[in-house]
Image (cartoon, rainbow, N blue to C red; front, side):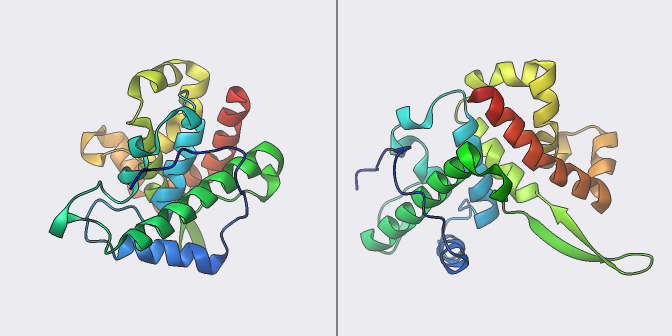
Length: 208
């Protein structure tokens, strides 16, 4: 099928919790090991919207197949039918437009999709946030246009904003020991994760 372009003026109706769960389930049931979950997808779409290369200028074929681990044929096809594929694409486009809408005029109501886990604290259970999957998705968007992103990683101010994303989204085997130890601490991961929303909105403000 021909992939649609992203149209900034299209429907921004947010996905309901049920629709988000449906999209997550559709992606989880795909045969590809490279298919994103809903958290990685949310980060990926955020990265696409923040990219120095306007998403509206990119053909859908350049970025949509990454979400489900790439297209294939026959037994390697990721979708059971064209109808299923179209449903996933429409849900993705609505979620993408919804993120853009919140950033443009309703930032207080925007919430990225992160994992939340409970840990036993000294006096009570703690809820700690972990944005690793979200950050991995974001970095997948960066990988689509590394040359365009390079100046943002080189400039001190934008590099600092991107730091929590790059740390959580990195291959830990390639990090220095000090950073690996930092990521091994759930409280450090929580602090890095909680820094991401403000960092993303600051990056958006610079781009807008």
